[in-house]
Image (cartoon, rainbow, N blue to C red; front, top):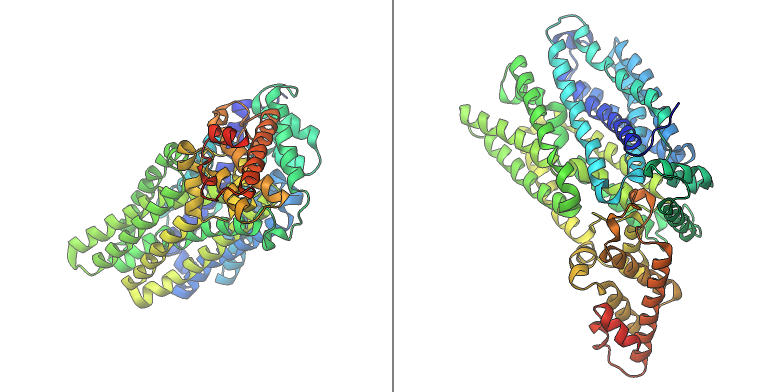
Length: 578
């Protein structure tokens, strides 16, 4: 059988990753659309609002357990085997759900199914990030996020179609559809490749080289393949001295900080209030707004289609606009939408109903253009190679922990405090804005090795806002901005060898991009190594270290520290070294 290579191979991987997230989105929407159906209510003896919250929310506890399992075993299993395991668990869990006759049975089955979905949400973004190109890595993961909405839309309309049947088929058929998505993953998996980074990390460099060649659709002795292989090996060498405890204790690569940033990105997503709308919109429209069951399902289905349409533009702009602006503006928009929902619920009659429905649609739009995609892009980008699988798994744990909390409390809160519940979501979203601005660096367009340089000791001490300016805006006007920061520190406190290496590494990363190397064929993405050749990087690194040493010597000879920051470009550095 002829093996897939190049674009067909990437299309296959993206389709598998997308199917994993489509399953995630389908399960998010399906229970909210059937939980008020006549046959479901009859089968499970008219479950209370608390029972409804448990049926829906404890599924997320299963997903949390699945993410923890991926954290503990995912790195040993690899990306593909982890996804196979998740698919099989989903199949068994779906069978258990469709055979349930009591609430406890259904809850247990939902938890079991959630374990499989949790494994996939932890592993899929990492697999995609490690085989995608740097210039479109965000777009590829955004395609996965779009499939969350496709799954959500499918669940709404499949449930709507089944609602015309009055037997148990009305709720059993929508749930059973999950098996179809899981089987697709099992069937396409053998034609796809394992992550070359995972293979190299587990000392199978020859197979990693073969996978690199397949991804680039070239031979193993091609210069681009050899360069990517060398870069991956160098990244592994630099990380080899650390221990796995560094993900909780920081270390030279600031792994703890990076893990928290990834966890925080998915915390923002889940505590934006989207689950109140995504899981319960048909119920809210029926119970809170006063629509009939049929009309509520139609409006919710139209809202899901609008949600899907709104999720498409980020495929084009997320690698142009960046991660930080999308999150900041998304949080601001969601703050306003939640406030206007409070207003709408207090306006009687048709005008209030129209405002509420419009705000629910805008809720979908604001979320789809921001947190829907960025929150899944950030964790695999921000973590180091050694810690990427565990960091992404912990971020997925954050997703499901806060998803479960928000989903479980929603029916209880709506029943007790009504519209005031949206004030809480407005406060949460408003609080995200300064967190993102001050803590989160921009990662768009950077290779994973260059993202590593952001967090090396000297530069990594800056805030997110400062890092954003250093590594994006300032490098166009002041390409040696990172170097001057290192020189300032060296005058105040003579740096260690490791610190000088960290500062120099940051300069090399900036210089590589300024040389225009980021768009070369060497970037089989975030996962396939930095863009400049090893020889050029070594030469640039030696030149930068020479400039650092010369500037520090001049400072120690009596020059004031005020003169040192003037080294803001290559010419100034050359004059200083002379």
